[in-house]
Length: 290
Image (cartoon, rainbow, N blue to C red; front, top):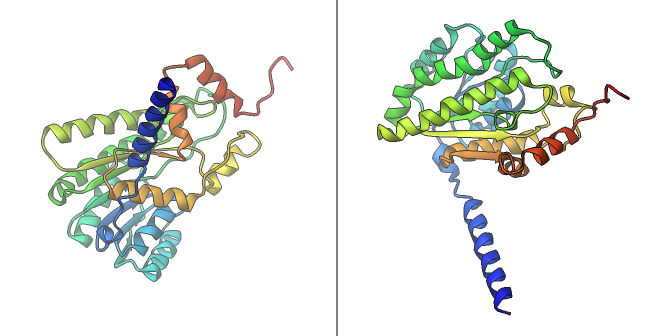
């Protein structure tokens, strides 16, 4: 009986702690009038985040490569309640574009409260082919432009005590098949922004850094790449976008979405052989000996 009591007590503590961690402290009013910069906002998660910020009454500056598509997203944001919705078409493969984008946002909004870094460059979903030139290009888009935008925006975020929201991936914590180039850029993001978070705290700068570790999300591009290859349920893109917006607003350090992604990350170092077997089990790939 005593052992049973200890077990039950331990379970109660664990359940209570999980409930504490998962409590919803988000205040929608906190985003009314917030000045938000969103990259990769023409489709997918970026587009859906723009709509959620709009519903909360934020002021938004959107960027992506396709101006016509961006304009349609901005128009819908205004219909949903955004106080401002402006566009700045840009190609983040160009080293000069990130700073221009931030300068435009600061001129139009007079400051920044949130910088949401979401854009990614195209990369094939296939085994490593040895294309080093593509890796260099992808690092410019997926990593260096994130660093450049952050550097340009940091003084304004420091003044507003704002937040940086970085969209990473399970592949930035655990290496997975068919994503060598992409995974490298996400690991780089995790290292840079993890270090930056420490340095901001050491300098007593009240700027939050929220890193979002995402699994498979049902965006059109992700589903097209993984269809018939990956056996994993995709999380809804709108729900994912809302979770990210809330995590940034509540200054959460890390968001795992869906929650099952955190389980894989927990066993990463504890059970490496089992981890690798679990990961490869999600993939439909014929054996060379078959």
